[in-house]
Amino acid sequence: MGKYKFLEPYTFKNGVTVKNRIVIPPMTEQSSLEDGTVSRDETYYASLRSGGVGMFISPVAYVIKNGKGFEGQLSASDDKFIPSLAKMASAMKGNGTKAILQIFHAGRMSNSAILRGTQTESASAIAAPRDGMETPRELTNDEIEEIIKAFGDATRRAILAGFDGVEIHGANTYLIQQFFSPNSNRRTDKWGGSVEKRMRFGLEIINVVKKTIDEYAKKPFILGYRISPEEIEEPGIRMEDTLQFIDKLADQPLDYLHVSMGNAWRKSLNDKTEDRPTILRIKDQVNGRLPLISVGSIETPADAEKIMDNGIEFAALGREYLREPRWIEKVENGLEDTIRYSVNRTELDELGLNPALMEFLGILGLDLGFEGENKKTENGVDAVFKD
Image 1 (cartoon, helix red, strand yellow):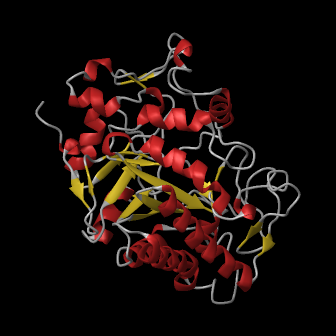
Image 2 (image 1 turned 60 degrees about the horizontal axis):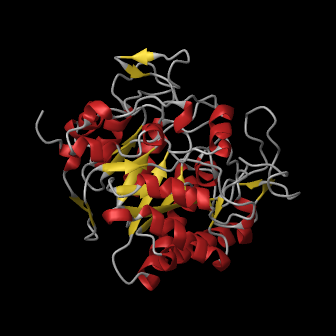
């Protein structure tokens, strides 16, 4: 076929132009040193995948010590990490790729072992409804303000380290989502109760991050926000509340909204009568005010082009970019028939997939689709190891 739309550049409202519409989304690789310093494995992993895509979003970094979510996680919690963050930014920025640092606080989705004896913390003292999860303590107002400030401090570090932007991680059940969710937020103060009050934490973080960008960035700096549309818990986040929040987010000083789903075309998790894909409902709500990044089971050029055909600005390829670090270059050079959709175990070092990352994928029940090992196929492509 002719030139793909996803190969076309895109210019954000702030003037930053990305060279194409393909994004590497944030993927946990559990490869930082124990204290959160970037490791050589991480810079190698990043350098293999940079240079082709328009944007490369880092594995998530915690903004404050008690916000750590898992072992081997990247830290942006102190100025001492700026030199190692700079190494990661440099590795991600090859050949004009825009490097984005994702930042978060894990909240109740951590444990006292990971926090070295400290209790987890969240909007309310309610354990996540999953096996083995610890009960967090409820954050005080002063602690909430401290965490909001920490997002600004982490943004300053990202700017000084040479990143091209930050993505606020408001998805995947972590602290910002915990404040928005009626499952984890039972507060009756200004941070909880109505949907408007449950939005406040995320909006305050956007505000402080934008102020930090305005103060420290010497050139246009990308600000993104990632959101999960629904929860299955009762009570939990439902699309009605999410669409209200997205309407508010679309008027914030953001450059993009990243919609986190396991399948880009997923329909409502809770309303089985809803026949429209969630991403298109969100697109209608945004109504052109912000570009969207769609992610989830996008693997082939045809998958990515379908995203473009539906008027969504960016397609993010996650697990496929673990298998094929040169995906976009192969498309650009007419070598689509050489794209890897499975992995040979002898290629793991070559792909920068170290044992820590492979163990993490195993814990999640994910599979790279190793050649010759009970390979499942779907339309000729591995159906295993999806976003």
